Image (cartoon, rainbow, N blue to C red; front, side):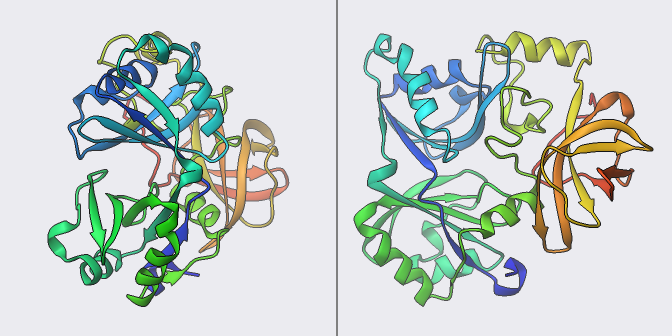
Length: 319
């Protein structure tokens, strides 16, 4: 199924974690617990951020949406309980803040594709649609209350929507009637490989840090002290980033965990693989000392491949 061809796909993302941090002091707390400069965000804005260990190993890539007094935190499906536990440890000392897991009480949708904005204009009108990345607001779609955010968590145009579970079926019906096409759940994996978005238990593990994972857009190196900040700052200052995440277009089936080779020498490790719009595609970490570059021929086990930089990944020139 091609997003380009269909124009707008409705993808159920209700399995993703949705944590709600209530109380205005909560934003300062999140700021100190993750990599992004969250205190710079105003109500109606959002950003990606990374939760890391004290040694800057990745726990999860999350998206934070800031409201007047609350924050919504979208987590990977496998990480909601871990983040609830980690964030909850010190939260009792933050007066006026309360963290709740709203995943089971809410739904989440992705509306993905170049015609998504036009579709929303049919059911909502152009005035109510956020158009800047991560911009979000509460709206009503034909009487259904919904949180609507610009962006899909991928490199595709579109929107993220969430709301109370009792409105899920009705909202899906409205969007499908307006012209959206229901996407199979497995499509997310195809889209995230094509975008290069790292996934929990694959690229997002404590074995790697967010600089290596191509998540520079989710990191502030100047905001001051936060968990893992010193480790990340030293890696940038002394140019000690040992490996970086790459896309690999391969000419056959490969499996995660397979070594990435260059002229027979191991230069990295494949972390994800699967079908994509143009053949097979993998993600893997490649050691920087081997000077990985766009178009570099490699082998994934016995299968030929070519390194490619994917649109979700962000790396400054220092890498």
